[in-house]
Length: 134
Picture 1 (cartoon, rainbow, N blue to C red):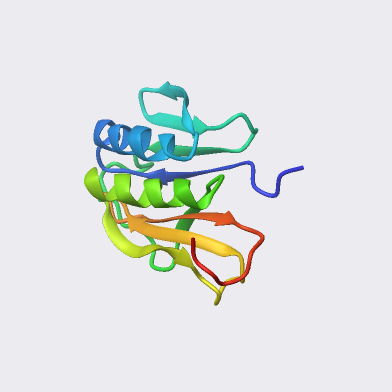
Picture 2 (picture 1 turned 45 degrees about the vertical axis):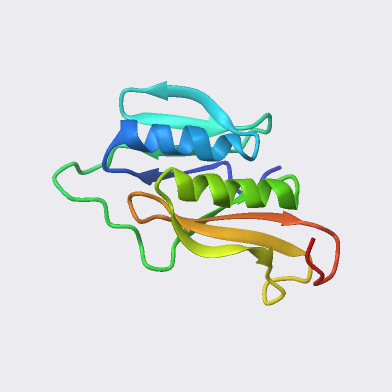
């Protein structure tokens, strides 16, 4: 049984975010699974999913939480590098280049971005290896 079923983030412009996440999440094998006028749902073949949605209170601006970040799973280090590189070309801001993060775990190969609304994103693959880069 999965630990988390799904999670969602509020976005200021659903069409802009849809375009961003369509391109970004394709690098790790995820795609739109379904959508409604106020949200877009992304996923892979597994049951867990990620949602971008219009804010619950549309009178308030989007304010990403200090300390919150979403981290996606990548199948291999190449996908981590593609996620980061593609994210930068479509409006993401660099928040940590691809590489090993031994402060998290010896086999943690990840990268970090900030999306157009200011949400912090990560991507990681567990290589089963130590601290050497490839």
